[in-house]
Figure 1 (cartoon, rainbow, N blue to C red):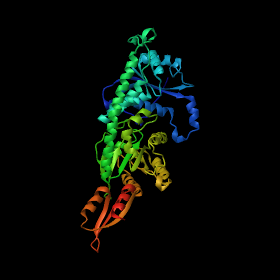
Figure 2 (figure 1 turned 135 degrees about the horizontal axis):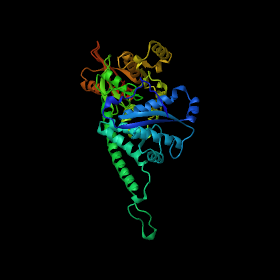
Figure 3 (figure 1 turned 180 degrees about the vertical axis):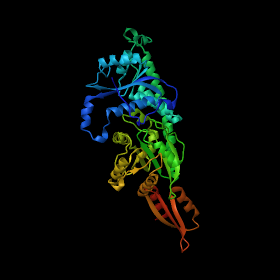
Figure 4 (figure 1 turned 135 degrees about the vertical axis):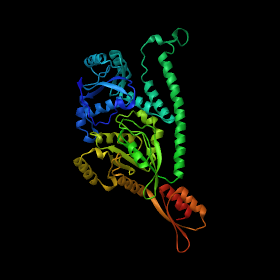
Length: 454
């Protein structure tokens, strides 16, 4: 196995940052030759190098405090049904596992239950595929009851498929009637039934979470503050930007999936407008679909947002591929790349040299004004004023301004406007009437016009 040197600037979690070591691990990046040929036909933005994939897999392993003692690429002509990689490589890694005293082998690919069982028997170590690794990280990062339920739901669905019939001695008793009865319920079938029962209970609790979140969204709609949601690849700098804009103290660290549970804060913009800023879980390539489904209630905050800020790490070598992965997940949520609510935020420009910064600024200026990205450094605050202007401009495009003339004694009508719209100004006209200018989205603007016959 070829030893690879990792990029020192890669956004990976250092083992010394988190705590006690949870095990010695070997990280394997299987790379299909047909993937290389297939990537040639795909756009440059959608592809990432084998080294970058390996570096990300190492970062994921270190995110759960695994001590990565060996890492490397394995090039394959085809996937072996029994072990994914060839028997020669299986034997080679068996030697590595033994000589390095590794207790965990991370396969950065989807591994079937049978392949996992065969590899664990051959290596005498626990085998984790990419999905299992991401689920483990999510399980450790979840801090709220809601997050724990969502992760457990996804993990149980994953674990249910991992129950493989191995020993017939686990059969409990004979079932059926007379002499035609076959084997009774096996331990595996009992385990599967217990898992399914637990999944049903969690789904019931998640339905309650979904209803609660809907009530919260409905209550926020009654307060005329638009929602601005942060989305992006994991470790793109969303939480740092969130803290910079809200002066909050949400955990922000140079690690994968530092933030899992969503956070919302009210923010006053310079022109007097107020928004609710929402920080969400980061996305990643090959994000398990079960996680997208489990976090649907949380991600609905993004679906219903007035403005969606797609934060990108422009210092990363695979920024284009990361952007493609985020767009893919957003597409699963029904948010297309051409959605007018989307604003690209090109973050971490403080990491770029002068030439790279100038090239990015020129590239941004050549984009159509409606789709022009905003260059910022969430760490230093550079470009934050441009981002706020872009948010206000996008909000103004999606909200309507209405001028009203009220009787000064109509306190109930004025109070209704404050509850259902954003009051921009109120002055007394020369004729003694109260001139009020309000702003609201299309739905609330229609209600304002209907109530005051505008």
